[in-house]
Image 1 (cartoon, rainbow, N blue to C red):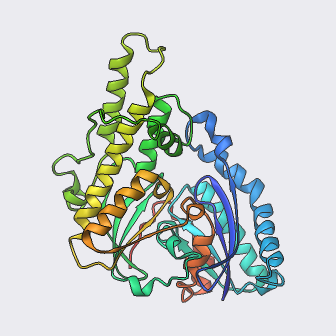
Image 2 (image 1 turned 45 degrees about the vertical axis):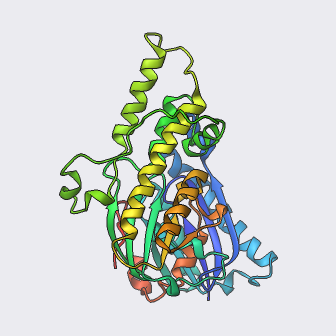
Image 3 (image 1 turned 30 degrees about the vertical axis):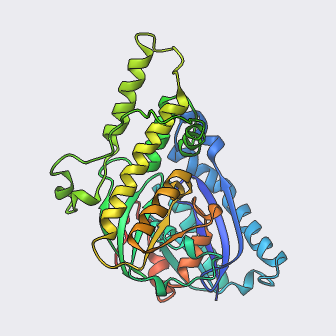
Length: 356
């Protein structure tokens, strides 16, 4: 089954063509990083405008790539259209959803609505030759700019959030730190690069993200499986103030050490919660998806955690860690029982959560 997927939940306009859930015939992503760099973060109005301008060209490019690669002969070979309908930025989601509805109607094929976070957990199966079913039950870790969640997966397609960040996501914590340090946007790759320059062992003692007592319970979650990065950001701000003194325009000294210490705190927080979650039941795999999963230090830490517990670690190829449409089309293969009428009548759900 050949499915065309569309993704526009945030600042990437993407389209891909995927066969049978894992074989990627094409994947095209237009990134808006340069548009948002002056602001140090994603501006919803700018993002939605860019999606409108680029989505037709991105869809055409993905179809052309699939045809040139011999995956399909023409657009009419598409069996279904899949699209992200949440979570994400409402104006951005609307662009992709409306484009997908129009394409599905014009081709007279089913439309399949896809949860963005669930799709990130499908990325390790793209171009891997693996099928998800043998790895169930699994612990899913979605770690990105907007989400940091630990998800129980008793079977493929059934999800229950058992832990999450109670404030900022890991990717957001990286972005805000990079902005504070004057390093630019997006923060994750920049801080990772600077951290690798530090060869010392004298790390700054930043907090490891323990939530305040009682806050996890209010969300109906276990504190041992939750994290909080707001205190870490405050600690970084206070540290920068202490080394700068009264001159707020002075250069910040020892940036690599600061980045290494800050990143170390985030990675330790995620790894610690993951280790706790893996001990809750006999999982077969740890499935990790999302843009922050590209971080080298985090990958190494999760590999150690998985090895200690004796479960297989499944990570996406680097090109599928960030937002992309291959994950949307790939997951849709397992969601094709969703009726056309339901999807065509669907609206965007910016706060959508994963569930069974």
